[in-house]
Structures are given as structure tokens and as C-alpha cells.
Length: 334
Ligand SMILES: Cc1cc2nc3c(=O)[nH]c(=O)nc-3n(C[C@H](O)[C@H](O)[C@H](O)COP(=O)(O)O)c2cc1C
Image 1 (cartoon, protein in one colour):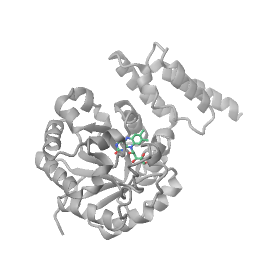
Image 2: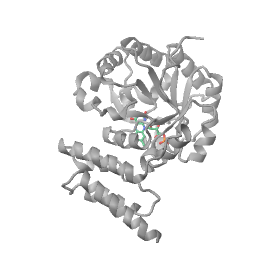
Image 3: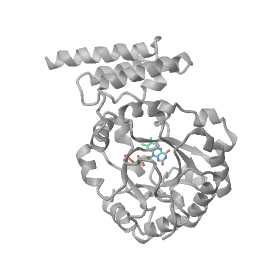
Image 4: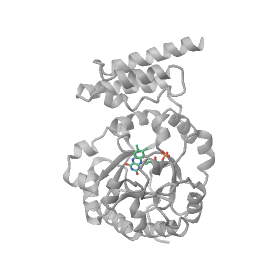
């Protein structure tokens, strides 16, 4: 068996997926307060952006976000290697290559999910990235694209990339259909196939395969995680973030913080950020789901979604809203 990087000290049992425009640094701080042991991911950043762009803007983050994975997009081995070299000093636990995104923009740059059809190139990219730093290099991919055979095609893809030394794969358990579906449709319409993902995890039990796609409840996760090194949640972590506390409790026996405690921690963070001219709304927009399904949820959503833009007192606005929600909830319960 080829030597690869499965064994490192990173705990990948619970991961929060990279999501463009959603999992920015403020969102990740929020998720960290909900799940102290989760592995968090940046949004995808292209290799070219890192090579040419403002590193502080793209890679800057708060230490509380650690452990944090940087996700890269690209398909040119030497450019990816250069981007890894530039990013290596920024404190990331791991660097991940995006082989799952189906957007037209990404396809026209010949990276993302269309790379599933080019496993040799992905292997070359990963080898170059490994040569550029000692950080673990991992891949996030789908179970296939278009009419690619989801059995033989996926096996071949994984075997070739693992052959280059990659030991960890985050597997979105549905195909991407590259023609005719929007990225959003590509997250919903191609059917989920957890069994296919599980067969891979069984066949390659020398690798760490992390299951992603459609995971939404603790009961479902308790069943489906069987056979995998971990689970990765995307939309459910964003829309119903308090779910992360229950999963963290199941996985790590982490005492769940209350919603109020999380909100107060975020208020402190907002005080710090707004003092540096970050608009409060840039932080609160990620927190709208904190009270989802609870009494007071509507008030919370409305205040944080609509009124935060007008608020003058940073974290004070969050503290006040959380108090109003708690009073509202107590009144509704009585
Ligand atoms: C708004 C949004 C943006 C996303 N951006 C990325 C991205 O930058 N990189 C990536 O690999 N996947 C991206 N994804 C896909 C997610 O990481 C994940 O694979 C997908 O949503 C399936 O998981 P879920 O069903 O738990 O949401 C994005 C998903 C959403 C909803």
C-alpha cells in the first residue's frame, strides 16, 4: 500500500463544510463557540488569488477559529504549490483541494468538480502541494460527475489520488451534474448515495473518508456515520447552528453552551470587531438561525437580520436582543 497521510493529530469527527459567502471568519468564530472541537473550513480561495492578492484579507482569521482548514481552488500544480507556500505561515491545520464545486465560473477555470474526470492531474496537484509544505493536504470531492461510473470511476479517482499520498477525503455523497444544473440544484437534485460512500470507506479503510451531504439531525448522523472517519455538515450547520452543540455533545461529550452563552460570547467578539470598523451586520447575519425552532426565534431573526444595520452599540445590540428573546420565551412558556 502506498504511503499516505492518514495519520495526523487532527480530529475530523465533526467538520463544518466550506461554504462560499457563508463560512467567512465571523461565521467561523460563531461556529467555534457552538462546537469547540469541530474542524472548521474557510471558503474556497483560488490559488491565483493567494498568489496575487491581499493575504490578510483572504487568510486573516482569529486564533479561536483553530483548528482551521484552508480550502484552495486550482488545477495547476505549480500555482497550487506556490499558493500553499504563501499560506503555510498562516496557522492552518491543513490545506484542502476543492474537487467538488460545480459552478460555471469554476469549470471555466478547469477546477472544482470537473477535476473528478482528471484524477492524474489531481494527484499531480496534491503531490506538488505536499512538496510545498509539511501541512496535511486533503481533497474534498463528489462520488462522481455526469455519466462517470460511480463505482469504478470513484474507486479509480480515489486510488490514484491516494497514490500521490493523500490520506483524507471529504466526500459529498452525490454526483455533480455539470451541464444544466445550477450550483444550488447540484446540492439538491443528484441523489445522495451514502451506501456508495460507505463501500469506499470499507474498501479503503486505510484512508480517512469523511461523509458529507444532507446530514441534518443527530439521529440520522448517529446512524450514517458508521464506517466513516467523520461527518461534515454544511447547510444544516448554517441554518440550524445550535445543532452543532448536540453533535459535539454526542461526539466529544462537550457540555453544550446555552444559546444565551453563545450569543454573549459573540457580543464580546462584536465589541472587538466593531471597534475595528467591521459592520455589526457582517457578524450578526450568520447568527440568524441560533434560535431556530425556539420561542423568540422570530424576534431574534428580525432584530439581527434587519435592525443590526442601524445599531450603534456593537455587542450591546446582541446582548439586548438576547435578553428580549429570553424574556419573550419565558412569557410564551408561562
Ligand atoms: C452557499 C454554499 C457555498 C458553498 N461553497 C463551497 C465551497 O467554497 N467549497 C466547497 O468545497 N463546497 C462548497 N459548498 C458545498 C458544501 O461544502 C457541501 O459540500 C454541500 O453543501 C453539501 O453538504 P450539506 O448537505 O451538509 O450542505 C457550498 C455550499 C453552499 C450551500
